[in-house]
Amino acid sequence: MIRKVLVASVLAMAAAPVFAADCSVTVTGTDQMTWDVKNIDVSKSCKEFTVNLKHSGSMPKQVMGHNWVLTKAGDFQPVSSEGMAQGLDKNYVNDADARVLAHSKVIGGGESDSITFDVSKLAAGEEYTYFCSFPGHFSIMRGTLKLVD
Image (cartoon, rainbow, N blue to C red; front, side, top):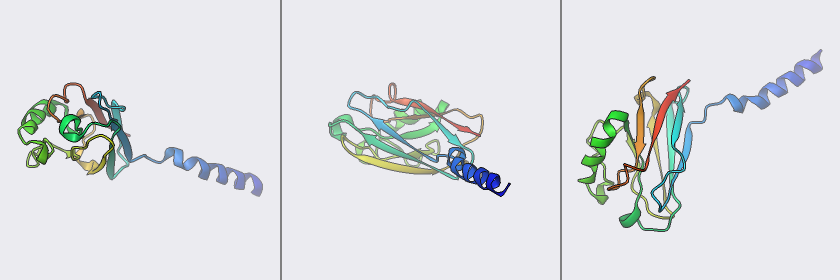
């Protein structure tokens, strides 16, 4: 009997990481203006969520830079348009814009950046879009993010 309980306990502990929420994701952009991740699910159990942004290409950020910007789905086009006016030195994002829920800096080929945001900014049932706000990229480089159980 004790042996069965011990074996069950060991198996339960080994399975625990399967149920643990993964509170981070790595998203890679390319010189061909693509993301390798099109959809991100964020667990409600996460207090914070981290996006690790990588640029697998070789072009410099002035030519083919990428950033990661998160907004509500309905806000991404105006935020991107307004961000373009901010320029590269401000990462093509207006930091004062409350519609921007999180954003990284602009990176070039071979570079990386991370952004961590508070999951309490997200609401269940709301649609979110993440995108690159480098001029001209948002129409292709975008994906969806949602809060899940």
